[in-house]
Length: 314
Image 1 (cartoon, rainbow, N blue to C red):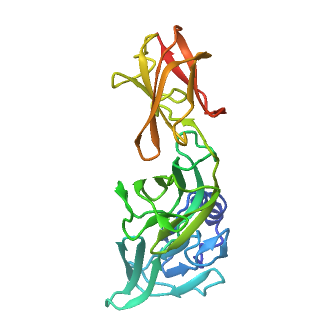
Image 2: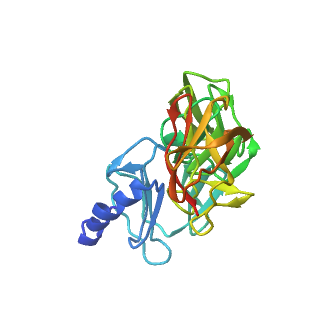
Image 3: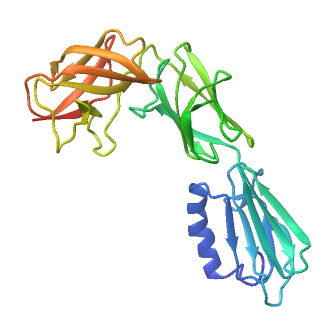
């Protein structure tokens, strides 16, 4: 805010050290006090006004709760400055947040609606987290302001939001404000447009598809270890699999599922069968060779190698 504290060392430290952290993490609204005034900035980034709802921060100073209010002339960053006693009322409705400032008689003196547009940071293979994707691959979209509430269950739209591939809505496996999981249709090829649509706007990116993009899913509780089961039980360092057992690995980007090979500990596994278990995800069964240790495991499809993970074998 403009005012008697604007030039203080403490305020300068906030601007220099705290605001960049807030901007880096996508904060959209900052509420302040101390100055006995009401002030609202334009949407700011790096101390400069930017277009509304494009990733800047609105800073609201509300210090008119009881003491004698003061008026301070606004500067180029301040959209509204009022020296009146007041209070704020806020309401969230889906992907929009509205703030209203009221005088002590209840009269509305200012209003602001934040409707942030979606932003896509990256769209990657859900298993390897690389840009290697193919038709039918599981894809994870990372970004901001994607969905206002979590959604799942294969619906095509939630809260007025959807994900589209070449203009067609695709089922949502999981979605929230910062991440969306989908499976690409098996029929697409070449360069495809991936778009997130919300009531506030849309964001898009281009995926460059490969013929196949095999990738093994990892065990989220043991980074670097393959997501694998034996007899329905999860294989971990505490519960390793025995040599000769038939295991199930989980993968994506296998194309038609033909010509899938598995190498465990440098040896070719036998009895390899790949079958799709749900959209974007394949179960690959194979017999563990005679070896022990924390063995390397890797897929290949038509000569294309997947990421390499580890498999605990007793």
